Length: 202
Image (cartoon, rainbow, N blue to C red):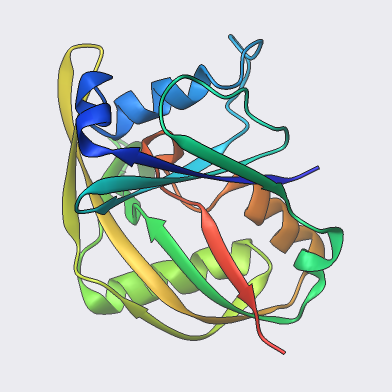
């Protein structure tokens, strides 16, 4: 089962529940899937600010248990939805690259720290690389302007770079593609990144 949930939340309701940033939204979503404490996160989400209210999209392998905030609507994705060849797509991503450092012996290695990607040609290369790892090829795509997303986790403030991609893709490896759809693309999925939104093209 794959479920897609859409939640509408009024701004005053979000403020009342102290949904101050994307990590606070993430914690609130966790509570809609009780019994998962200590287990890896199984859902993806995306938050859109629609002026007077927020729209929250959640992709999950089970139906959420409805909390006492927001207007929730869940539907199951039909099995054939991921069997098409070409799709229109949208994805909000956190494009980064791991830094390469030179060790004492002169070898070069990645140290695990990530640097945000913001230049247009590097964003295109990042998307192409992720597409190859996710079982599809990008037929056409445009990237929106990079924006900063601020959050507080464990009483420490952090900042991530957000980029919205949209375009058209063709599936080349069905298994990889379906896995990427469920697992998400790129880093920082706990902060609302990586959910691949799809619309089949006939």
